[in-house]
Amino acid sequence: MYFAALLARTEDGWEASDTELDDVETLTDLTDLAREASLGADDETVLVFIEQEDAWFGVVRVDGEDDPRIYVSDAAAAARSSYGEILTSALIGGDDDDPADDLDALNLDGTEEGEPDDGPDALDAESAATASGRPAPPPGPLGEVGVLSDLGLSEKELLSLTSDALAEIADALGAAEILEAVR
Image (cartoon, rainbow, N blue to C red):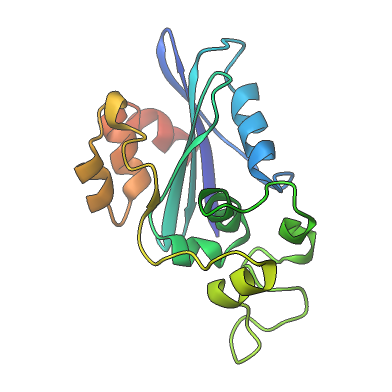
């Protein structure tokens, strides 16, 4: 089960909204979704939070037209899920528009359609990466650990987060009540 939310920083503070990722198949789609949430301000900061049942979480930061900045708490776990695979492949050099990255053939748990979730034929991060020609993502954090440093959450604090990480991030940003309202 996924939880996804957008936090947009406005002149009046943070505004949050939950979001559906059903139409998101690439990092470009996710970035476009974040930019649409910026409420018209081109230089506004938008954070996309994605979490999968305390297995991993990801933060994508979009500042205006700049390239997105990404942090994933556990790359190996994230790579086994469809939305996490979008983030990890962007971080380890996957091609955002590569047909091999098309999520239409993936279930939300990251296995190929028709394959069991467990057992010898299950698609794990290493075999998925090998099949696509990309290296397997490493276990543990991946991406820009300083992605939230200027917003009040240091690299050390980000790396130490475990359960309920998105709530702790929102608390450090002064947006805990706003995020909780969309949860």
